[in-house]
Length: 189
Image 1 (cartoon, one colour):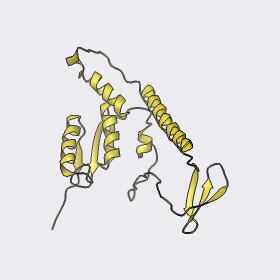
Image 2 (cartoon, helix red, strand yellow):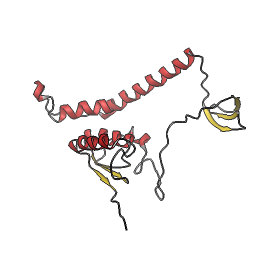
Image 3 (cartoon, helix red, strand yellow):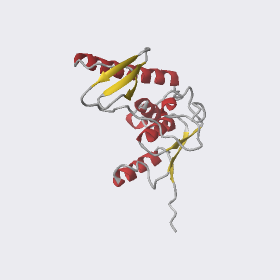
Image 4 (cartoon, one colour):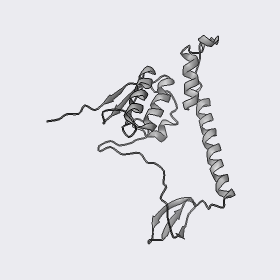
């Protein structure tokens, strides 16, 4: 989606004219863009599955909980349970969306990054809460596709966990794309 939105924005915004490429009435086929994204996700997932098989890594699909210092009880996605034991366990569960007090994710008006990857239409306006990597990526995708996007970040800058200079330079790039952010003002007594 990042690449597709960059290409669309470049052509629709006239950025290719300097290379002799002129396009009138450029249209977005969002269904095709989302299909390409789904294809890429499937290829990556299949690639991981292949590497697991090639390297004799067992992939257990389910929800696990510790059942002692060296054991996991897994509720299998296909039904049933399985006990897995190991000397060492690495917890690598992926990411989860940070909740906000008083805000209910309904999957339609208030969405997470998961739903933002498959919106059926380009929204007129999108507010991204959080100026981290995922929010900025998705905000920039939808901005390039035509949405008005505002980023709200509590800290005094976007990408607050990264180097200050990187954050400042990235803010300039995003501003040129029309992606404003509103850091929370810091009050002191």
